[in-house]
Structures are given as structure tokens and as C-alpha cells.
Length: 219
Image 1 (cartoon, rainbow, N blue to C red):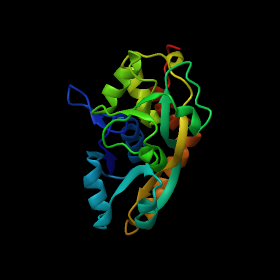
Image 2: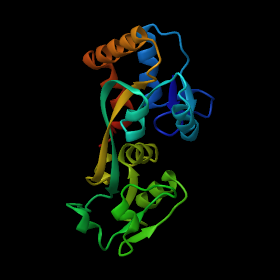
Image 3: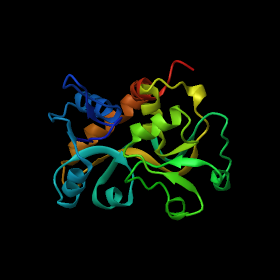
Image 4: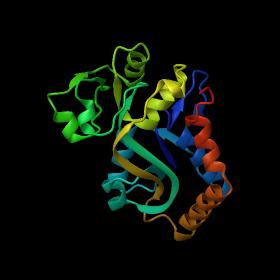
């Protein structure tokens, strides 16, 4: 059982404790299903290699073309990953043309949309990571930040930004997060995992974990 090693999905606290929104949800699935397996936070590149090597794995991930081709889609968890532009308050992004005239921070290595990535008419700056991009937004060095919307909002929350300090994002793409498993994992095991996900959705536990990470109580 794998969780991608990226904040806020799976990461390690200063005290060495593993945490993260998808890490916590997958732990609940493991416990409820009765599957005897360890949940390991793993770098994205390593996960990609394991998927292509046909290893016996399960993970919570966006329903990308690669995963749908290589793994069995067990069950969605009713959470969606969105990629796009998160603005500061009072910056209204009604459509793509709204980006003109803004200064937008793009963490290095992030490409949320090919059109946006290749648009030389937009003003862009390239901080080294998500945290630096959010810090620039917080002190009004930029008007907006590009990337995974949930990640941006989570880091903004950690930096002490309130919901009212952020505007409505312009979403370029959206993917459902599902539980995926290798096809050669026993059918009865996959059935137990599917049942566990459905139960956790129905009893509100998954929603509770999502809200813990993404809902800012200080509005």
C-alpha cells in the first residue's frame, strides 16, 4: 500500500511521524478492510516505476491515463484533484483572458496546462517550490499562484492565511481520486478494499479527514 510522498498527500513531520490526507485515508481503508499491509510514503518517481513493473501495489491517486491503463480502478473516494490558478482576494478569474496583466508564480517543475505553460504574453515568476510561491502571494509580490489547488490552499493554511485572503481559483483540469490496485491482487482482497472505501464514504469518515486538512476554520 503506497502513498505518494508530497505535501499534503503523504509527508513526515519534524518528529518523524507520517501523516497526510491520502495517507490517513488509506490507513483507514487498510484497518477497516482487515488487509495486513503497511502504508508506505513513497516518492512519485518510485511509484511510477512500480506501476510500470507490474508490482503488486494499491494506492490512492488521480485517475490518470497511465493508472487506468495499468491498474484496476477499485473505487473513487469522492475527492477531486484540481489543477489551475489560485488568486489572492479581489482578483477575479472569470476565464483564461483574466490572467492577462497579472503576475503569476509557478513553482519550478509545475505544468498545470499546456496553453498556459507556453503563453509568452503572461507575466510569470518561478519560485523553487510551492511554499515560496505562497509566501510571495501572502506579501502581495504576485497576484496568483499556479499548481494543484488543494496543495496551494493547504500550504496557505499552514502559512496562516485565511480563506478570505484567497480568491476563487481558475481550474484547468480535474481528476477523481480513486483507490487503484494491481490486477493480479486477489479478487477477494480487492472486494474487501472496495467495501471499506464505500463504508468510509457512507459513514462520513473520508469527508472528516478531508475537512481536517483543507477546511480553514479561521475565515
